Length: 124
Image (cartoon, helix red, strand yellow):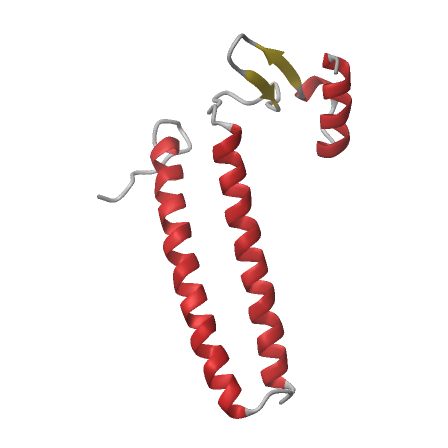
């Protein structure tokens, strides 16, 4: 696959203009740069870390969607009261789990951002 093939695929996926994307290859790293001319600071993170962040966001979206469906079922009285209690308990456990996971992700992200002008002090 040529550099132009990579560029075309990434542009199609991201909608970025040609001047906002560059791809380079070193002996150890493939670097995909989506910065623009007005970006003054750049943080490089691995595709693995970016994938983890995307998976976390997708997980939260799924849980919020499920909670929305559950609340609609409760609102329209589509499930019996004893099931509402059980589903509420499971929903609470799920929300608490995601809160803990996202707080850990946020802390790690804020530690990186603290090194930039976009950072804020990370509470100790």
